[in-house]
Length: 332
Image (cartoon, rainbow, N blue to C red; front, side):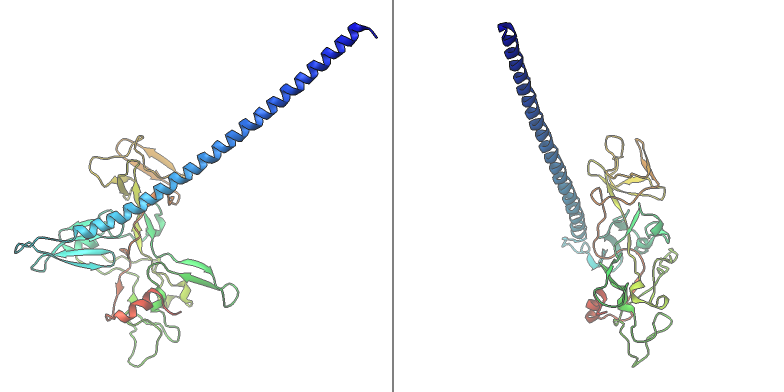
């Protein structure tokens, strides 16, 4: 065998082994690099989820703090004659009266464009503050606090459902064993009924002061349905939006953001923290208009879901504390 050929063959084998080692090292380094990138991406997503959770928690705490502040502002610690006031609490509002019994102010406990009302008491029912009749067509401005959760029933016929109302159950006004009653068809003496005593509701608000009655088409009365699960008693309230710096505000009839803090306006550096993927958002230095909005994201905007809301007026034919549990959760 030629010595030169043998030497050349050994050299080629060494070079091939070196190439295999280099390729193996590169493959190992690539796998380690990909694993590091994958771990970094996982950590980043985990951090983003944690930040989003903290943001949602802060929003919830802001709602609680706002309601607590409303309750505290309604209290008067003055002791001098003529300076004391009387406050009357109700679900969703605190009204303050002067010593002579005249109205002083009101503090709302549900989300509204005007949380503090002064002047005449009937200002509470001003047309600009009461949800319009078509509130259900304005999802960017209003939300129903009493929208039921509908689930398949555990018992009954195929297709049966169970409804769970979060605030107040309109089925408390339904008579399961006879005719339905209402303002024009009162319960007769001795008549048997499953309706909760002292509870009824209407589809229209009363005419108070200069305000005109508003009739809500989304309300379903006992006399209008054959199935109690079809009853509806919506409680629409306004969405409260946050800017990036924490400033709160609502939308007006033109879907333009109205800030609750004087002098603070949304702009490109301090936008509304609410994504509208299917709409066109126009940001300017003075306002933000939202057109064709999609339903709001829970993590990015808040409404104070406390007690009841301005909507259909619940009328009590006779006050009865024993009937309250049946209104909130009737037997049927």
